Image 1 (cartoon, rainbow, N blue to C red):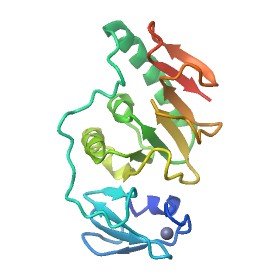
Image 2: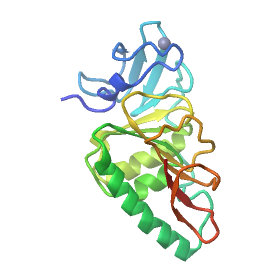
Image 3: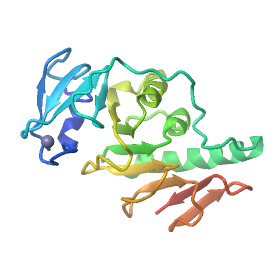
Image 4: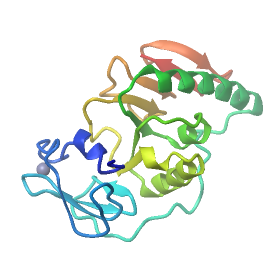
Length: 213
Ligand SMILES: [Zn+2]
């Protein structure tokens, strides 16, 4: 059985030429037929992307830095809510995550400030691709995912949130900086109260808002 990231490569396009769906060549490093932990993948046009300790770096080609750690663990909240806001938010967040985890068989793509998502969502068997521009944040999420015994189902991609739009997926945007490219079925937790869509919950200060488009 193929594991992540090997399995999710079928869903991922080359950021440069968008041509490589299901046509990746995997080469070099610590890899097996089922899993890629360290190595390189290249598209048919020859664009080469590095995998380092389970993180696929798609923000720049041939990215050869050492593994990047996070020096300061993040809470996941974009700004600190009051205790009661935090409690209310997490209760609603738990209901919604439980719902959309059941909602579709397609892999979930999680973009934006996703520490909070992985901290508080219920443990589940869904396949998930996490996209974040900061590898330090991805390393923190790797630990959260490992603690929930979900590591075998999750892939980690370093890329800008707006970049990398895989096909056949259901996307969750957690506190996105901008919400371009949001599709009708996407779930959005946003700081922007002017966003279109149904509002599920707002804190007293309107600093935390959940939307489903
Ligand atoms: Zn390419």
